Image 1: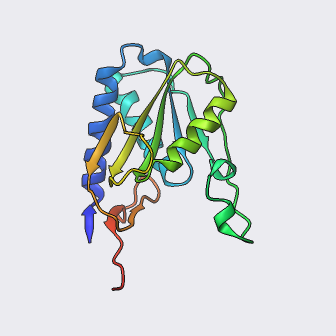
Image 2 (image 1 turned 90 degrees about the horizontal axis):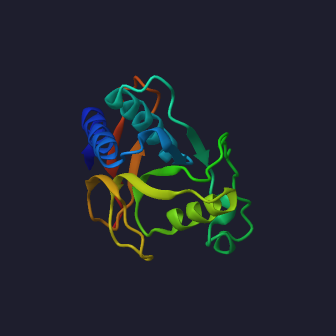
Length: 178
């Protein structure tokens, strides 16, 4: 079941960008970090929209974060070797207002892992969480500061966000066989 089409995704990211722009007085000191994999796509679009809204002349510092080795479920994976993706943060996170971005927030475990990685990289001034979809059912006391769509479900939510001009962008609830 589709819950967001391409235009609706764009509208939700625009809403997030406006909220972030309005609530961050020190916009020059923010940095945006997307969590691998789908959070990076959302973060890139969000960064561009904030830059446009605030009419910034320079790029917002942007980073990519992989949390694979910080996951608390690696033992459960058994013999499977996790695929490690790139972490690319080319700026000092210390004293920055970090906007941490992910596509879907569920249990909070991914975000907890991301916070652990960021802690190892420095001491940000603050970290705020932006998510495209909040599906509820938290296992940890982690809540988003900025949320596009709230869609409480225990079913998996899938986010397809291809290149910047893809018409195939969509967010949908994965159908489960009963």
